[in-house]
Length: 172
Image: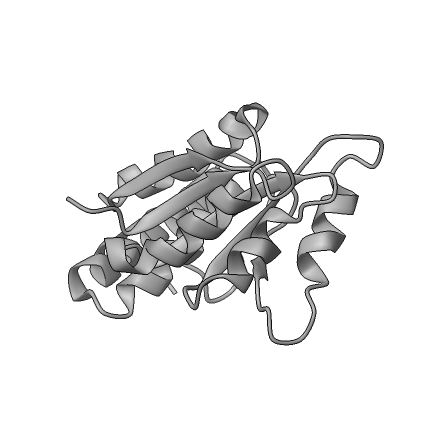
């Protein structure tokens, strides 16, 4: 099956971030691929991947990058697909430079941006985008969200002396 999501990394050192996104996509049975291309060292590869993604069936591109984090913006400049930038922690500023680089795109080159190392949220946002046209995926997401909420409510019961929150899932 053709991938619906491309996870693009600026270098192999970002593979741990890709794994976090891939785990979420696998949980939702979303076909995906992982690639490595550098906005600075292999710009033609980035352009070719971005320009050809839609024709291959890709609907969302996740682009993870650290430091100057040019990759998400370069990808967005070469496609009309949604691009979700994932700033990667590293360098002297711990990822803040990457976060600001991705979040401060110029007008006309939109890139969504997660928090630093926010690969799981990037993948969840991709699932939500894909679910717009897929009722089964929408239901799987709703089920996932209910389980996540139940986990929070369940964890509250482990804290002694904490009163229930009015109107929460405590029978209210």
